[in-house]
Image 1 (cartoon, helix red, strand yellow):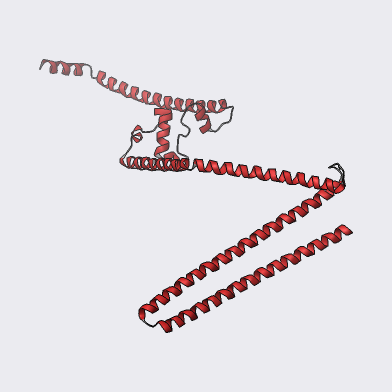
Image 2 (cartoon, helix red, strand yellow):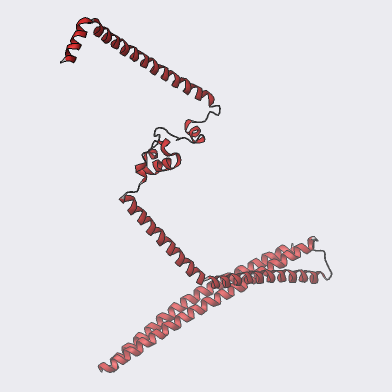
Length: 302
């Protein structure tokens, strides 16, 4: 009660004090608002000035992203491509630049879907490794065979080179015997005779290869006919055995003999046709060889 009375007395004695205090507080609030707005304006001006200074400092004229990478900052402040929003890119940025990248660190933890994918990738990788190891083991088993094949090919090439060298030496010796005295290998006559001998040798080798090929063809045809004949004999014997079992031997024997004769006639005709073709080929090759030899003799005579 005493305190209330005291307050009433004070307000009644000094009524202007309260109004002055409120008016002063309003003036202070307005001044603070003006000062804060001026501070914000000053801050924006300072930022613009700093940006302008930074641009002028960039004497290298690098792009902003490259310059940020140079100064160990986040390359792109805002996404500029589709992959900038992927989880892989964001995780990479957070691991490289930390909190300054502005990335939420919660995305760095794996989820169930990523766990399944990682398991599948791990299983596929193990399968690839296992398949590769099995392939290596199989190839290691064949290594000795491949080595032997390589050595055989090398020996074959060496023997061929040695045989070619010996043939060349024999030709040179034949040319020298043809002239009856030692001739300089750089002489034109020696070169012409050597070339002629080489051509003759090549033709002889070609003729030998052709004869060997023809012999192989004939042997293959004869073997084919023998196999067909043996097969037909076995079929005929089987038919005769069936005829004996059935009890119609005379008629079945006649039919079997007739079938055998027709089969032999067909085989003979087929063989005759093939031999005719081979004979025509041999005659044509012989004629071509004789014509070529005549042309060469005429050229040498001229």
